[in-house]
Each structure stands twice: as structure tokens, then as C-alpha cells.
Image (cartoon, rainbow, N blue to C red):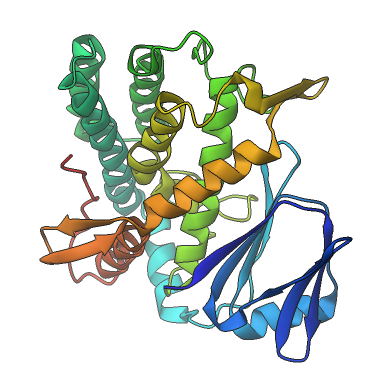
Length: 330
């Protein structure tokens, strides 16, 4: 499996012949081109057209983030696996309201049921989560009753709102209280972690879409509009609870990230570099972790689960097999 390269320092990315290197005041760090699938840039980094041409040639995606950890954009090389046939199928399913609703419902169902699994996991370990669990169950049961994307988005938002308010019970740390979901800027430490993790998840899903025949600009739950990418937002909804949220609970619970790992200024709250490195290192470990996949009868990594989800969507769009979302069993 190809690696993700994370760059936190300021410097310059260069191509030299058939190699890449990152240059800072303290020296050069070579990047193993054949082993690299994506580069995530958090520092102030300069590069030129020659560098981007080489990334395109080697099919390496580059994601870049602001100082505050917000996703800013992606260099998405020309799609080597792009398929006119698949784009037509994606458009057909988007433009046909019933077909679009069918897929969007499954994304909401996947998100809702994985949220429920996270709540069940902590409830079985002594956390008093009966009420949010019951509310999530009731809302999930209504998914098929809604016949508009707006209504589905409202159901998903409602499930997530009750879920987020359960974070205080799960975490049980006065330094990391939820209060309310706040973005750009996040108003507290917990929201800062959620936003940072979600940005990473959107980027990871985008990288996985690149390795399929799917076009990331055509989503189903999130409207395809003037935003560049939407399908990665759809897929992320399914995996955020079981990958990002549980990682956040672990980082806080093990005191790997504390209130001292944040900076506050006029723009808002941001994670210090050391904490960002800790977060991405643990996320990388999580994505490499394997689980036993009952349907295919072997172990797969969390990152591979995301790709398998995309393959299932491709089969649905081609009329081979109806799409059903991945639901965690733990």
C-alpha cells in the first residue's frame, strides 16, 4: 500500500530528474516517489509547474491545508482511470430524482448506523447513552419516509446533532466539552479536533476516489454544484464516526492531546504542530489497522474499506448490485 507523506514545516518541494525532495533551512528530505500515494501539506510550501507535472505523471495527489488545519484544496492530477461510461452513469443517477434519492438514503443510513454503533460501543462500556441511542434509532427508522434530499440532510443533521451532544458523556473531560458544533473558526478545543479530523477524512476519501473510475465532482447527498468535489463528502459521512470520532476519543482519553496542545488568536483556535503530528500519526496507524470483513471473508485495512465502498457504488451505478453502506459491527 502506498504511503501518505505529511509536511508540517515551511520549505520548497522540488523535482530533480526522477525524484522528489522537500527542502528546508535544515536540509533536504527525499520523497520515495514509487511508494507515495498522496502528499498532505500543512506548512508554507512552495513548488512549481515542473513539480506538479511530475506528480501528475506519477499519479500522486497533493492536498493542502491552512495554518488552522482547514482543507484548502487539492492538486488532482488528470484522471488516469477516468471513464466516460462511468461519468454518464453518475450523471444519470444524479439527474433522476428517484435514483439520486436511493443512493442518498444509503449514505444517510450508513452514517446513522455507524453513529449508532459508536454510541452502542460506549454504552456497553458503562457510559449512559440510552437516550441518544434511542433517538438515533428512531431517526434512522424514518430515512425511507423522506422523499427529498433536503429532508434527508435534515435527518442526518438531526442524528449528528444528538450524537455530538453525547460526546460530553463519552469523553467526560471538562477541557473538551462540545457546547455546539462550530466551524471556521471552531469555538473550542473539541470542535477544533473534529474540524481537523473531518478535513483529513475528506482528503483521504478524495484520494481513494482517484483510484477508481468515479468522478469526485458528482455527489448524491451533497449537491453537485460549483464546489469542486462532493462525492468525497458523501463517502466521508459513513466513515467519520468509526474512524475520526473514535480516534478523537482515544487521543483525549489517553491524554495524547491535552488543552496545552492548542493556540488561540484573533482568528480562532488551532492545533499546535506537535498535536497535528500526533493526530495524523495515529490516524495513519488507524487506516493501516485491519479488520475481518465478513462479506469478502478476509482481513482488510480501514483505508481499503473506503475503496471497497467506492467499488460497491460503481456496481450500483452500472446496475450490477444495489448499493448498501458499510456498517461497523464493533
